[in-house]
Length: 392
Image (cartoon, rainbow, N blue to C red; front, top):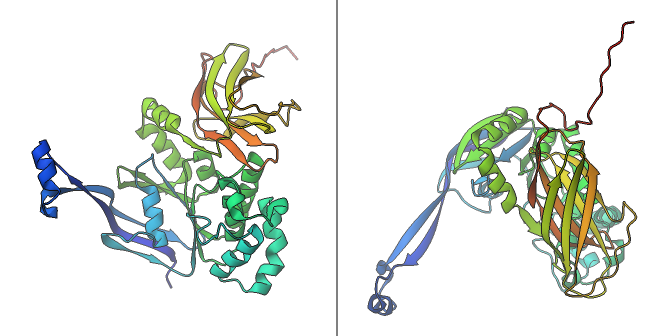
């Protein structure tokens, strides 16, 4: 009996890019009328000789820096790309959470797209009807289901697609960064879903840059760097190796490049941090690109492994944000007691519209917050304990 759900054997993938080279104006002009022999082909090695197995019932992670080849690998397991050499074997039905929303029709309503996408996922109409309300409630889109999909924000579309995909009957799930969907509440809902997958011993291949999520859910993890497999080991050991392999300067550059999405109706233009012995101050400058919008402005702080340690927003703090006026800029000043342990922390600013669903600007990993206290603790919080010993 085969215990492997996915087998990747000596897989390599190259991408070819054709470019014409002309050293003079004359050669450029005459080159237009020449055959393709005058053009050169550049090769990008996306993956080189990668091998590993994913066991049935295993939550398997794939990590690596931007451009390392991890997403290409996931797309090859999904069958979107074919390897140039080697082979990939998948046991059972596979559902990819990669290009969510493929098959959606923007001219149809959200309701109609649920039935359309459900049919593509293999559900009968009675099965879709039985799950319809759960799908809508999970996506938190009840008020929008009779609107055309073209009027949805990109975040709303992905949330609807995600809510459909989680109900697909699958033996193997492929997940690529779909936790970065919607606001913090919806992300927590996604995390709860992955906890159920792990508890139910579902086979999952999970690509992420969030090392805290990788450590929490993954049984084993593959580390990819420069198109090659570095190691396959426990999540804790791979996370430690990842930080050892790449010095702080490289990781800081990686973090600042970050990820950002939203409809850009209101954007964060600048983030500044100030750290004193007693206080942490974060100044978030936001600019309106449209009139009359009610917004929720938020901030999140993560440690160097990606684990959330603090965060809030104007709704939680019960601070009213006035409706936007196009072109105006405001600075939101966040203050908190400096109880963080010494280390480097990641700051994620966000702006959502008042519905709590539509993302205007989510800037994941926007900047680094450096906390220096002169001592290192193995805990995220350093409240400044006082200790007194008295004779009993």
